[in-house]
Image 1 (cartoon, rainbow, N blue to C red):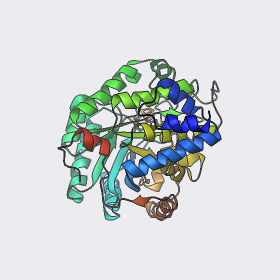
Image 2 (image 1 turned 45 degrees about the vertical axis):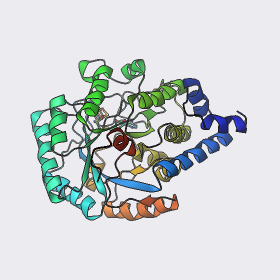
Image 3 (image 1 turned 90 degrees about the vertical axis):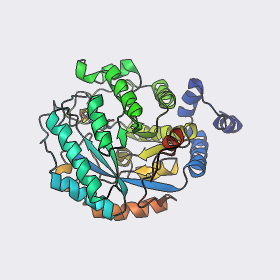
Image 4 (image 1 turned 30 degrees about the vertical axis):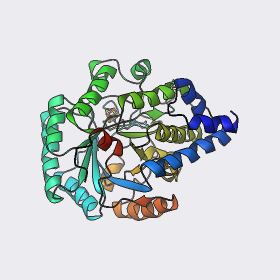
Length: 367
Ligand code: SAH
Ligand code: SF4
């Protein structure tokens, strides 16, 4: 594209699918313009602050068998764990004392009563130890409306449930063909979360086998149409113990996947100016400065890992995950310096709610 054309396109209030495809396919010099615009939009609409969500990978026990995921139930080489209550509360206390503002509790998906009740119990304890000050995001997969409601009533107020891919046929190719892995159910679950009043987050993997640029353009349109509050998306990364390993159909090299993921973040920031966008760990897996680069092109959320080191090697959704041998404090100090280098500041002690959500519900209390 001519430079003037890109600049004109980026100023449009609305991108069509064709616009999105040409932005996603932009060459290096056009991409720089996209990144520049995204940085301006970020600063204008959500400011310079980056918010922390301390990540607690509560358990790798999972009833599902997604074809891309390293902790799928079919992978018998993984040693399964569940953090103890004490360990979860210790991690939450660390987050609270270090002014993180929020935590994320993530886990493999289970719907059994013991699991759902344990989460309620943990939510109660976390609220108590922080006098209600620590924000809690849940990322515990698909659950019944009743369970989502209970967790919401006990203080979970944000929920991350990636659609993974918005294209129904592609979804079917990446999941077993059974009732546990239904695109419609996942979509329904997202709708339920929104209906119940959660700040709803979703996202996709970028650079999957069979995935095209047009699919990614559809993903961006899906986020806009769903009017989503938060996004966590990152590159797909192979895991040897999964059925998708070795499938190379339309697979692009890791460095291109990373570049594409940065473009997705930047374009989404320009499209949905006031949402929260995470700089995900998968970005850092490919490029050591991946999260900082994501911040520079529009992301405003970082999830420092608070999972005890002894469990980390068993929570490998994909290979080469970074920081698996570092304690929380070490991660913390390197992160702070890195964020400042990316020209951002840290919103210590703030919930850092999605401004988009607050605009949707202007009467809701924020911090
Ligand atoms: N079980 C929950 C939460 C844990 S999985 C759920 O599935 O929602 C969290 C995310 O990890 C998934 O949504 C998926 O997008 C991502 N993930 C899984 N395998 C991956 C891989 N091989 N590469 C990149 N991301 C992956
Ligand atoms: Fe389980 Fe989530 Fe991995 Fe699917 S992506 S296998 S639900 S942990």
